[in-house]
Image (cartoon, rainbow over the protein chains, first blue to last red):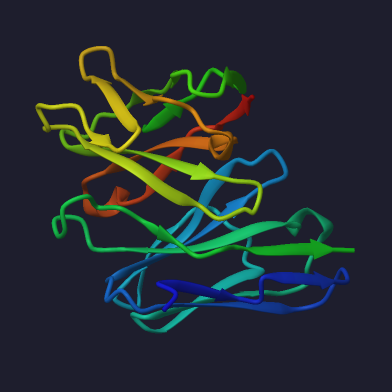
Length: 116
Length: 116
């Protein structure tokens, strides 16, 4: 069973379209995240949710809207896609800090978004 | 502010040799965790090793060890007996242990190439 699964793996779309990426984790973790990896491989956090509550929003444009219907799911909806949104988007989950031994993050396999 | 610095954009190592990937960090958090992740060309993020800031001993996981020098704020990854399959991007990361800053901050990565 995949611990953190995200769909789709690849997404090619035209500028101006709206798209969603879904993420699910079966690890029982309380916290979930979205990260963006740019063309230079730099990984930057976008959002974090703890038990469905938004904790971190790292100055991401309003066109990006995360939604967490329950603590096992965190979806990312992107409106009016732009060329600069092309990147790999990773979902991740972790136990809340203060629980577990290593506070490690488990990452999904990533979604490669290409805007043309 | 938290920061991770990886000064080696690329490293070469011969198979069966050891290699050290450098990482320095900066944080004002009293407690934090340091991580290394591997990203092969297939794109997934693979957790390698974790070091807690209060851990007295350096972490080891099979061929991976973390050379933790707290006073120098460095957390170098040592890979012993390199294998061709170790060729990948390697990211150093840090997690601060406080609620509002509970996020994993990444360095810019080091691309390791292992040659026969």
